[in-house]
Length: 498
Image (cartoon, rainbow, N blue to C red; front, side, top):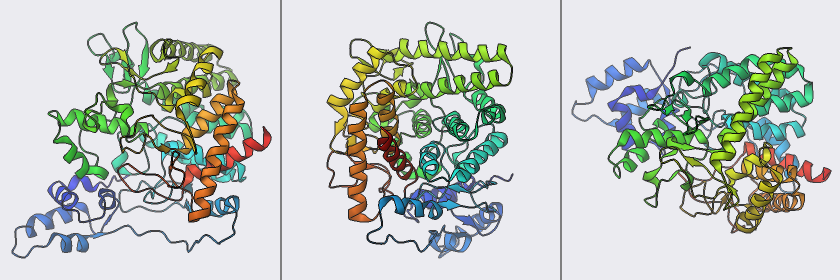
């Protein structure tokens, strides 16, 4: 597979991104070069110092800007939100195509989130699948899982999305949840079929485990903790500005001394899917203090525990009892480590752990509901978490993401569909069904109100001022929107059955 990456153009890439040739940095890295990149690079070197050289003209001559895919779809007044979502699945579907740009071609059709996002995203897709299942579109669920299997076989992991500039990092590992969802529809043989892919995904997150030592407590995605426990953190192979956010990250780097460390931490935060949030800040200095690569996130480790449990079950079904037991023990050890390092008895809440400073973070975030969703929290722990969720996070339109209002999109006042689902289902599993139902009703009502006023479903919502959509972040609110559509249908279906 040829990997096309406009970032390799060096000075030309930097000039285009810094001089605002396009509306945002992502547009240029999604452009299609009209000839081989090496030819464009040579042409630029020859022409750049000539009198009258115009960068805009040069770019327009040598690159084709990505065009919005128009389906002709318009919301018809009076169309129910369910009917609207049902029609949107085809609008958001992309079919296999040969790529002449940064897009990594996939063998099967898939759903994109919508808006400026013209590619598949890893963790988005699980929540999209929840709705596809309700819509009886298991054909698309199967296709998307097989696309992720293709990416694992090709790269050894599932990238952030199918773009070359995403290579080097993944996203929250929901692949085992996807396989579980498919197995619920098609039977246990699905777990056996995808076992080799589950193992490869696990190997990616546990890569170079043998290199961990007291002198080297961080290796790739791994962290060795003081008691010998091994947990995971977010990490990226590169320590340069992300090409799709190049200018903003160079500007931010002016606030710190160690640029490479900042870039690595920003990339780690991007791998988390929470890009960006005060959750990753080191101190009150703000965005430039982001140190995501030093943090052991509670949600990531819950997901990896689920991966270990799923592998154990699949191995058991395959007749490999000894290997199954090994993964069951790994999951048990991870559960104990999560509770040792992320549970705070005094505060009655789960927190991320700062492995560099060897202390818990203080930020209260919805990541604390993942231990409920994945069955890690005890009855007593779940009750304490539920009390804080009700007292501090519950707002008019659902749950806040954090309690901080920083202007970052993964902070207050914003609410996000995937976190509503995790929190609602986690609370319900732990016996707090009344609270779960109340959150679900408020979230669905907010979705419906915005749809009624705009004819659209949004990427995120302002759950405090429900007359607004949402604000904050590195780009405008997007409509579409894959995971919002999926969670809406799944929550509505869940409420009907409760």
